[in-house]
Length: 514
Image (cartoon, rainbow, N blue to C red; front, side, top):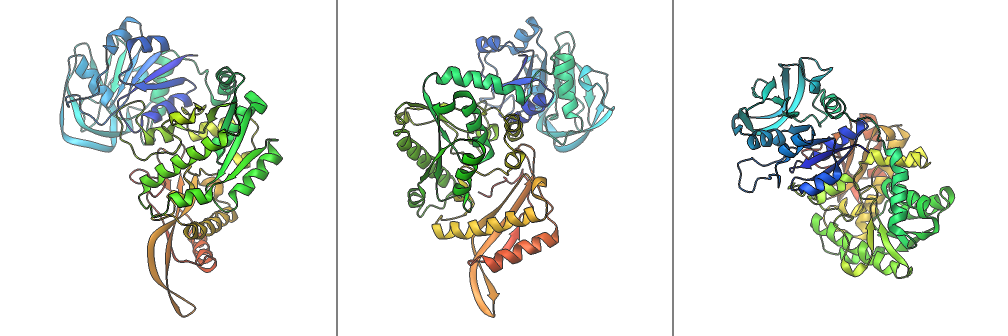
């Protein structure tokens, strides 16, 4: 399979480059900027993309490849595209000059294309792009020429045709760059010569083969949360190894209303798969007693899941593997596995397993986005009504009950969340929303109910639109629907007397509140 290699220099949106390239039907992989020459050669890429990043090329400890990527690419006729920091690195390593910009450039800008180039095929001479940089290229490397500019960046896109190197100061991978997807498609198809031979559906057979090879005669424990990701993983594994798979669902006490009961019935009826349901709610809640810090809660929940799975694994003496529905956004927000990025929040299913667990991880979708997993799920025959379910975080209500987590506060939130989702369904809006949920705030306020003064909790409602969870916009919920939601929650859920609606986007906020 033809591969595009992305070298990660720490941008939070590096994965969006991969997404756009995959949407163009070309397989790609992200690797750290420090990749060895030997590893790069083994990948045999058809093209190389240098990502953006938060650093300056002149900063102490700035990310620099461990060998001359440009010379290697030239010798092997591999095209290169540098994006933002990748452009500046291209200039820096080839004799150009990069300085602090007189004016930093963030947000939309009008790109003016000065010279025709394969990168800009089919794109108007004036196009809107998204900028995010403080440094700028001030002196061109020998053999390079300017092919586009903006008002604030006289050198905004460059090329060296003889060496097949290009660079852009803007971010073609983000949605706000009007023709960004076209540019990346032009790069992988017209410049690198790749064909559209990859899609999530044809991933299935290769994953089944890889799973069978990895597992052999052993058995696999699959942590089944009830969300789309773990469900698709379970169905894929069942297709690959059948009865060698043992699905375990842990009721952490942090699930939605009747979630565990519904999940058990669903799998038995629709997938002919039995699952073991473990009620560990008392253990989870006891360990969360008195804990309010969100990062501590995530780590406690993650560690407790591991402990429970470790104990359950003992029931299956031949179990050698633990399968998880880890996705790209989980990885990039938890740890910088591919570059010097900043940790946003940890995810309970990222970071490996403790040695004492004696299980190896199987994560078939670690390199995929949510919508790609949904495509795989449909190809596996999972019904649309299930595939289209909104994401639900591994730590569950533990991160939606802000402040201390107790059974009482979880019960309050469960009821409010159930009403919220019911009203979204009733309004026919569920499939227009990427994720919707209620949050219980550690805030109490005065209210009046039945001529009596109350002092109860505040509930926040959140609904966003997104494609992959990396960015998101708040959903414009109709006022009449909001009114019904608020009225029902306040009247039907004892313990809540005030409802708010969240209209922040990601970034700067995250989708979840903590």
